[in-house]
Image 1 (cartoon, rainbow, N blue to C red):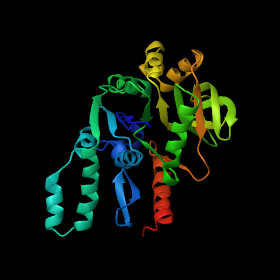
Image 2: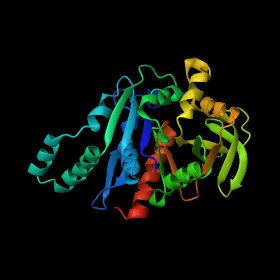
Image 3: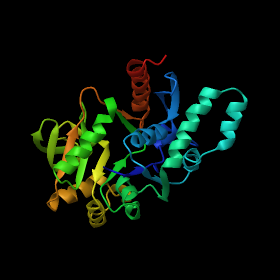
Length: 289
C-alpha cells in the first residue's frame, strides 16, 4: 500500500492569468458532488487530497512556492467558520466542510518550499527527506477520475507486480507534442514496459502522453541529482525517468481506460474542458442536480 504522496503545487500559473494573479491555479474550482448528493464546487487541490485519502494515503507533502499561502490556509482547520455556518443554519455546508477538516486531522500534512519554479523534477527532489519508500507523485493541477478510483489501485498493482522503480499513467491523445511521450512494449493489456520518454517532442513516436500521476521508489532522487538542468534552468522529471531507464531500472506505464478521465486545468481551454467534464460526470455518476 502506498502511504505517502508528493503534490507539486508551486507553479506560477502564468497561462491562466489574470485569474491566477492572486489565486493559485491549484485552488481554482471544479464541480463535485457533496455529501448530500447535490452539486458543489471545490478547489481542485482539495479534490485531489480527498481522492487520495479515500485510498488510504495519509501522509501528504505539498511543494509550494511564493504566493501559495492560500493553499496552506485552506488545508488548516478553521473552527470559527464552522460555528458561523451552524449559527446561520447552514447545516449541510457545515457538514461538508467539517468532513474535510476531519480528514485533515487524520492526515499528516507537510509543506515544503520551492522558492523558484525550477521545474517539476526540482519540485519532486525537494521532497527527498519526506520519503524512504515507494511513494506517489500527483501534480497539483490535474485530476484523474475513474470508477472506484480504479486507476490508482491498477497503477500501484503494476508497480509492485513488476518490481518497478517508476510507474505512471498514460493516455492516448490526438496531439502529444505538448506532453511527455513514451515508447515501449505492451506486456499485458494496457500496460507497457517503457524504453524511452521524451519531453514535448516535435515528432512524437507515439500518441501515449504521460499524465500527472506517478509511483516511484527513492531511486528517482538519485536519478534526478545526476541529470543536467534543461531549458530555462529547469529540472525535468522525464529526464530523471529516462536516467532510470538508461541505468536498467524497470519503468512501466499504465494506460487510462475509455471511461477514465484526465482533467487538466493548466491552460484556459483545458480548464474549460475540465469544468465541462467534471460537471457532466457529477450529474451522470452521482445524479447531482
